[in-house]
Image (cartoon, helix red, strand yellow):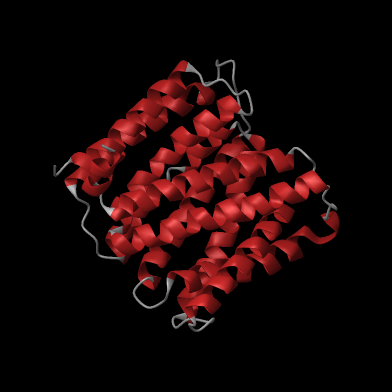
Length: 291
């Protein structure tokens, strides 16, 4: 049965599902290690080190050029991705995991719009339906937190940081889609840590905290899970239109809701469950539309 389902789904979907799980586990590790007193910028730097080592080894294994071809876009991808990651990590460390992930996952909407203008892609009806239903689910999840009379309130700076991270991620994804035509996925991934590490260390300055053994292990896991997410994402974008491939990334919300409940004891509200259900329905519509 599993084989039948696997054969009926495009590889881009499987790549994106793997990517979503990797990023969800990464966010959980970020949240956990921040609780041990490690600053956000230091987490970004640590992630860059691990990701850089893995990417470098992969490039050497493939015996291809380390520096790529379209250096301008590669540098732009690394720069935009670095600042987007800082926004995302700040949101993850200051909001419940589910809410932080949901807000950041506005990026498929931004990606779809940017892809129309910069990649000349056509948004298919299945993608429009998926985005519309998923955005409805998104609104249901965050709506109680934005009401003035609600019991639960989160800092506006954290919400804004998550949205800025989503916009930055969308810009990075559009750049990645362009780069897949000229450069290998490993080179594209390598440029992120290449730029993220010096930027984060300069901004960190004297706020560096020597991590404990437990924190060091979590920082390594952040880098490993990031690599899983990045590889899956890059291969998904190479296999499908940017707006259609990233629509499946909404599944990360469901992964994060489960991890937040199981590990951080963040019991999702009824609105979170309802919204997450709509997001899954949107993803299934996108998968099964033509079948």
